[in-house]
Length: 71
Image (cartoon, rainbow, N blue to C red):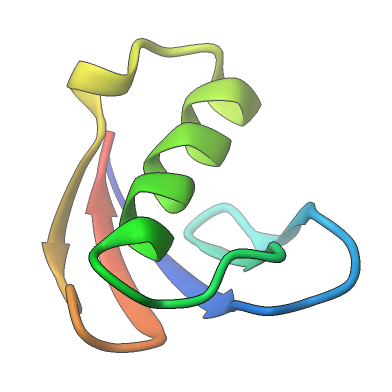
């Protein structure tokens, strides 16, 4: 399953907001430096969907705030 994720780094709170079945907004307090934000995206989606981190992969948007993630 592929989903679209809009990332809001450097936010005060951490949250996963579901817009619809394929679109999500992630807010977290990590800066997008040295791939830390992408790791946080995988970690948060892993917790949200109750899946192992190894089954979550960012397909598009490694350097963008809009990402396509495969679960």
